[in-house]
Length: 389
Image 1: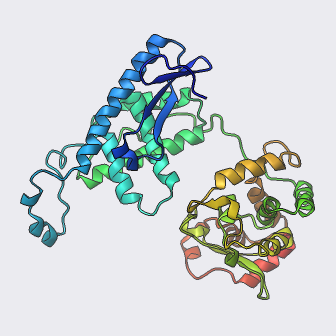
Image 2: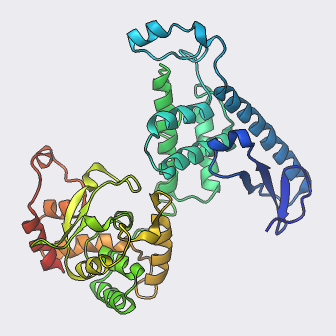
């Protein structure tokens, strides 16, 4: 709840000052919210006022550039469009080709070209990661960032309390944005965000597999409660699917009429797959087969309609709800993703060949030869899944 406003563009909540500014109506199509709000991390009115003014000035400058983009280029009618179309080249504004562009502009280029058809999480990751850079080092030209900036960026992420794995992911996104945008405008640069040292294991907790007795107990509870959330848990428990893969299924992806019931895991507009090798077919056995039959009784085309609204699969919401529920029945550090680790162990325990395990889980099998052919037939996969179940 917003409390008394004490300075321009700020409000106080529980003694902490927050920045707040409404997005201009003519620029609302660039944003996912109508207002920009975040903590200024201070209880001092003087410090909050200074930080808010700097943030407001930075926004005014950024909004100016956004508005310029939306206006037709002066002298557009003088461009050599005929020569451009014949050569197949892209016209780059004067001062950019062979020069540089700011990081905020680099993000725009990256999302415009690489973000087509990608989920909103892809856009947010690029904007958030590069936003962290701008918070620490400013919105500089990509050629102006130095190794000292990259190190300061790293230190800023560590101060935020981020785990090593999260820092690795953020650095990877920033490197990609800088490299891609530089390539687009013909720059050959040495990316300062490469080879930055930090402890990649700091704060990283390994995901523990679920013991078999815990899996059986959870599956029993799923049959007892018998609702759509428990169907989702059961489906994951005996297939080893990623939670997002299962949550984004259509009912028609569950094939129950043939001699070998199975699920077809494929990309959908509302739910992308993690890797190209994630597209696969997995036999349905045990609790997963029970859950698939229960899912088919629903009216929606989606297997789990509550997690497929507004044109995308909300796997984060599913993860939060289900992880909270299984804590009652699972050892510490075990989550929904632990079923996936357990499936690999369960297949190992029955001496299933490693390349069969990889095909069932959608893991990559090393070696050139494994890229040939269409993989093991469903009958072979079913045999090992039945044995493991």
